[in-house]
Length: 104
Image (tube, rainbow, N blue to C red; front, top):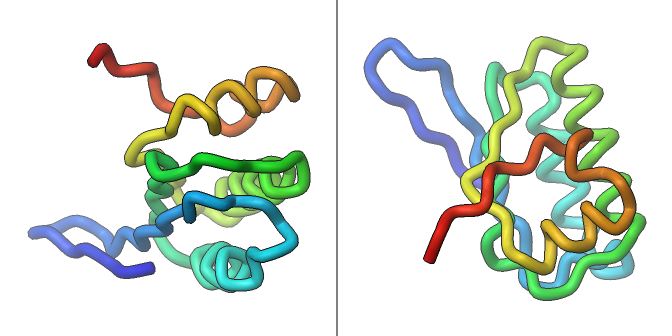
């Protein structure tokens, strides 16, 4: 996780999701998400995700809901097809506010 600051823009915490985004191996992701809750903004990069499970998607959904409640703007850098399909299957794509699919 890093941060970016542009002229007059609030700090945006960058959270990169790993290729294997299953909860069994995601203590680092949990720490990143918890650390971002009180930031002015967070940007999640889901482009590298190759494997994801229900627990990880639920965690991301809860993070987004809590971050927004605390006034932290949450956006996506991108989302892999795997991430998008899993979120669609579970009915979480809208709750996660995944970015529109970009044409290749």
